[in-house]
Every structure is written in structure tokens, then in C-alpha cells.
Image (cartoon, rainbow, N blue to C red; front, side, top):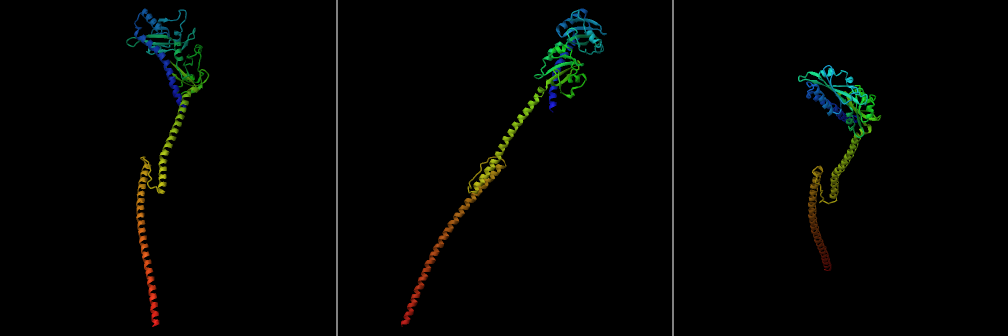
Length: 379
């Protein structure tokens, strides 16, 4: 997954760099095609042809020479920035290989060749010259100095310390920030990524880690241009290539920690939200058990705990009512018992008084009986 992420990022960078180089070449092709169609090259006189070529050479500084070939490859007209004493390498470089291409109305781009005097890389681009019926009448050729591509490649930003360079199908270095290595005609086919291009391997393997052009470990990939048959190779120091991944990991860790903090806070909040009402219920139960019948629970949540609190308050209200009614009945019963006790005490006193009267009566009767007996005895 990590390798896929880095490969996708590297491939995007490589494609952007390839587009820069491809646009350079395509721009030259468009200029030549436009000139072949709108400069009357098929019907102009020799003077007009020469004037048109000189104007075109003056406008495009990357063109070293311009030539017009006939149907069989013979030179009809030529204009050049070179001294008349300098031999031209263009004709030898194309060696009539272009004829089958331009005769079919196609573009031809030669292999890159090196200037014998300046060691600068050159390439020939030929476009067909056709009449209004699309019939091939010859070709317009431009020898392009690729040193003007060096600045483009050198200005391509590949991260902070990355780089890009261009190689041909043989692995020869065509453009690179260190011009001396280009002028030396260095071949880079010993590098893994360049060898992949030379051997026709596609980029399905993605970015790889290998030694780069600076003999350092890099993450590298390439994009083949197809037209021309070159490739743009991009390299990024391995520590820098993995930097975005490290940032993502760091961000993930921060997010994980933040999420853990949020979950913890939420857990504490929810715990308090759940336990606090339960604690209130417990305390209220204890208070009621001690006789505080007017105890109420102040819980306003609209959930099961809120329903439980409402039920508890209703129960406490009923218990309080029952207790008040019970106290009233006890009080009434106590009054009744007190009155009954008082009535009983009065009856007991009355019985005691009557008992005393009865005892006194019996004593009187006993005395009377005694006196009567004595009277009888005296008679």
C-alpha cells in the first residue's frame, strides 16, 4: 500500500516532466507543419523558398538548419546557421531513412546525433510537403539543437532535491542539469530505470528504488514519449519520496490521538450522564428509607433514566401521601385509645367506690347482728 502510494505520486511527477519535453518537440513539429502548408513551399520559386526558409530560421532559434527535399531525397533548398566551411551531419544522420515515412504523409524524427565540433545533441525532424490533393511532393527538414531543451529539463521541479533527465532509446543522455555529462555523450543504460526503457519494459512495475544518476539511492520512474522515442526519467531521494507518507502517518497518529481524546471525553461525559442520575436515585432511595418522604429527584433527561426518575418521584409522592394518611389514622386512634383509657379509669374508680361502700355495709350488718345477739342473750 505504501509502495503503491509512492509509485502513484512518482508517476504523476514523471508524466508532468514528460509533458514538458513532449511539448518542446511537438511545438517544433507544429511549426514545421504550419510552414509546409501555408508558405507555398509546393509552388514557390527558388527565391521565395529561400526567403521563407530564412524567415523560419530567424524565428525559431532551436533550428540550426532547414532543408527542402524532393520526392527522392534530393536537396532542393537549404539554409543554415553554420559556416559554409562546417560540414553538415544532417544528411548523413537521416540517410534516406525518412523517405518511406514522408512519402506516406507521416512525420519522421531521426535518432539523436552529436555535433562533431560542439558535442551538442541534435535531432532532425521532417514533415511532408503536400499539394492541395494531399499528394506528397517532398519534405521540409529541420535540424534541431536539443541544448534548448536543457533549460526546460533543468527547470523541472521534482520535489525539493529531485531531478529529471532525458535519454534516447539507446540510453544516451540528451538533457540534464549537468550539461558537461550531456556533452560527454554519457550512456546511462547501466541504470535500472533507463535499462527498463531501453529494453522496452513498461511502467506497470511502478516506481522502484535503485541507484540514480548521482549514484545515490533514489525512488525513480520513467515515462516514454513514443514520439520521439525518448524517455523522461525522474528521481527523488528516497528519504524525500517517503516524506509525504511520513506526514500521512504523523497526521494519522495525531488524528488517532485526537479521536482517542474525543472518545475519552465523550465516554466520561456519557458515563457522568448515566451514573450521576443513578447516584441521585440511590441517594434519594436512602433519604426516603430514613423517613424523608418529600425527597424528589431533579432529572430532566428524556431517556430511560428520566422515565425512571419520573416513576421514582411519583412513587415517592404516593408514599408520602400514604405516610401522611397513616400518621393521621394513628393520631386518631391514639385519641380514641386515650379516651377509652380515661373512661376505663373512671369506671374503675366508680367500682372501687362502690366496693368500699359494700365493705362498709357488711361491717354495719356485722355490728348489728352482734348487738342483736347480745340483746337476746340478756333477755
